[in-house]
Length: 218
Image (tube, rainbow, N blue to C red; front, side, top):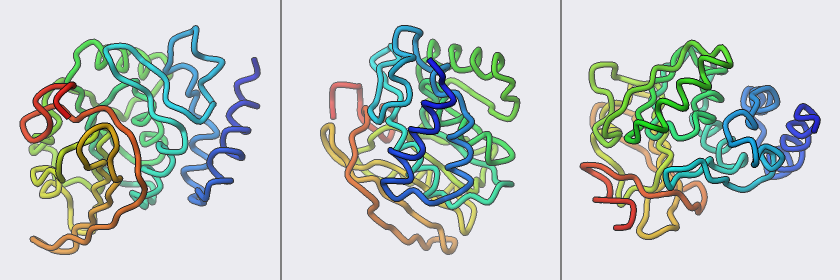
C-alpha cells in the first residue's frame, strides 16, 4: 500500500472537503505517517475517516477531528502546547510538526511508553510525555499557548483553562455519556474567557480528579 497516496486522499476527501482550510494543518497531516501509530493489522485503515482501537480501551481519533482540533488552536508555529491524553501519540506528532514544544500527559503508562517509542523511532524530539492525571495539567510548565484535551469531560476543567496564557485557547470535548460538544475557550484576560461550541463529537471519557471516576462512569 502506498501510504503517501493514502495520506493525500485523506487530506483531500476528509479534511479539505469538510472545510479544513488551515494550511499548516493540511500540510502537516499530509506528512505525518498516521499508519505508524496503529497496529500493523490496522495500517490499511489508518487514513480512513473513523477512529481505530489502540488497545487499553482507547482509540486514535478520526483524521477530521484531529485536524479540526488542531486548526481550532489557531497555531502559527512557535507555540508551547499542552495535550491531555497522549493515546497513540498521533495528535502529539501532528502538533509537534507545527509548534516548538508539546507537553503531553497520559494516565496509562503502557500507552505513554508505546507513544515514546514511536516518537523516538520517527525522530520526533519536541514532545515531552509524562504519566499522570491530565485533569491537573502541568502547572510548572504553564502558561501554555494552547491546551488540547483528547477525552470527554463532564465540564470544562478550570485547572486547565487557568494554565492558558492570555490569548491562548483550550479545546475540550464536554458532555455526559459518549457524545459531547467540542468547545473552544479563549483566555482574553486574567479571569476572562470566551467560549464557542464547535461540533458534536464522541470521545472516550476523561478520567481523573476533575473528570469521570472511571472509564465506565460517564
